[in-house]
Image (cartoon, rainbow, N blue to C red; front, side, top):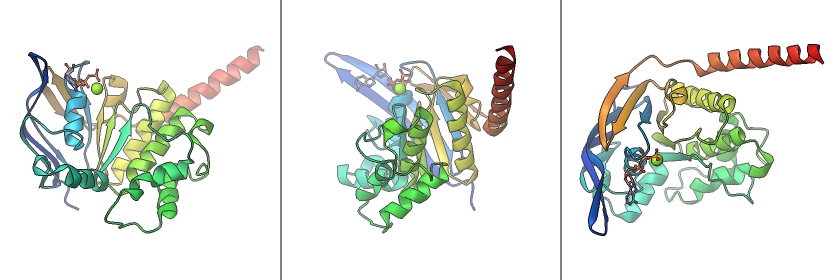
Length: 258
Ligand SMILES: Nc1ncnc2c1ncn2[C@@H]1O[C@H](COP(=O)(O)OP(=O)(O)OP(=O)(O)O)[C@@H](O)[C@H]1O
Ligand SMILES: [Mg+2]
């Protein structure tokens, strides 16, 4: 496997929003190359341009200037339909609020991106959905509706939905923003496990508690990259084991004092 193949190549990207007479310079010249197999956290304070950058990388928005290549394809030269196809086939999205359909089962939620896949490369939707749910540890929850699942499980369903088309890239904007600290570590453990399998993951977060599990941290300030470091990530599975042990001890102690 060639680990150095660029999945994302962002070159001199600017994004300016025009609001009446004022201009908001959300991105002011961003260069970023992300290779296959990376697990990267994009950080920065509120308003620094994280979501704007993610929306461009995700093909949800066009830059004002500069160029963007995804898997070697120049995305900002594509029309709306071609862009929608690229998005569907190459990118899996995970959002802070899970964005699951309430009245449908976990399996049906996961099948959804396949309905929009005009290449029809996957024939058996249900099997693909169940395989994807099994991969995120929810093989026994396929018929549950979102309100019958915990927050962490709902985010796992969303991750299964992102994975079902075998995308080149997972984009997650504040994926743990609605989760408690234990569930956050569980979701980060899943991302690390998926990344071990070779899936490229870009996540946006403003929490050090989340970014410490990434292999690379990029920090934005006022629409520019001010930091880009490659590092040895903490192990979420080790942290999880420690957390479980500590919670078991605390439980035993509270039972003894009853
Ligand atoms: N659709 C829009 N129209 C006008 N201005 C926008 C729009 N979207 C974002 N902005 C502005 O661009 C800047 C960057 O916004 P962005 O949403 O990328 O920040 P962020 O880093 O994701 O912040 P947060 O941590 O709060 O989510 C902000 O000043 C914001 O007000
Ligand atoms: Mg944001």
